[in-house]
Length: 316
Image (cartoon, rainbow, N blue to C red; front, side):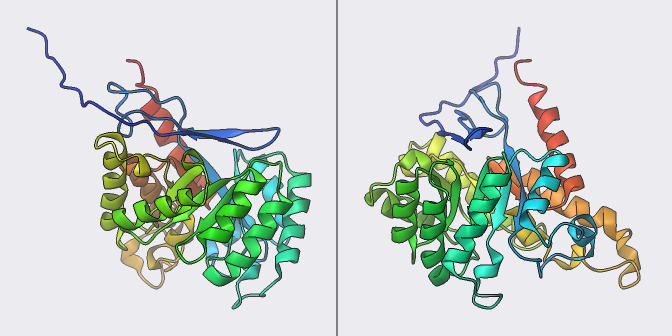
């Protein structure tokens, strides 16, 4: 007697995201829970975008500084370096616009984005500084400057979504909607954004991220519940791709910064730091993330190998 595998019935399907102008990148489109190839379709693999910043970063510890310090004084050179080591997409963080950094203007940010788009061919994700008031001023100007380039703009939050969503829609972009680790808040923000007229299938949910050992389990459960609600429970407002901004959170942790001299029992800082980002990223893929934003190229390679190995069983 052969074993009959019981299959879940899904009522939803995650929209496909295809962004970029000449060279495009894609993710989403799944009709089953992550990597359940026996239950649904997965037209695209999860996408990893390399993070760069528009200013020399203040939050990059030694292990990431070793990789990027020779190029990080120029975002165009930084992006081209990432492209040379295999990046499929770039996530530009406009860190200089934060009032506590350089407090650069919307026009200065837009000028940087225009120059970058003119110099690189990779699809671009444009992220604000995560200062809600300043992002509400900067991101609409930046979205207009990137009109026609089919970018992803982020992050819209409850306190600033109206202006950012309107500008992203006018510019023909996708939009990242970030809420604070709560399924209901994620749904509420999506409803509010769609009420402005923004297309639901162009929203990417960011339920907020975390690092391994720093609230990771809770974040994982929120992302998993969002994916279940969208695909199985038929909640159309939660049936959307998700992003995990992994590098931003992982490289703040003590485990990615403390040297062997400080804590010898923890072993090699290099290996420990890489695995902290890679394990966090791979785990979020299992919880439902379709897009990862990462920093260290070796951690990216580990994560890409994980994706390839899982997709190698597709169709078997």
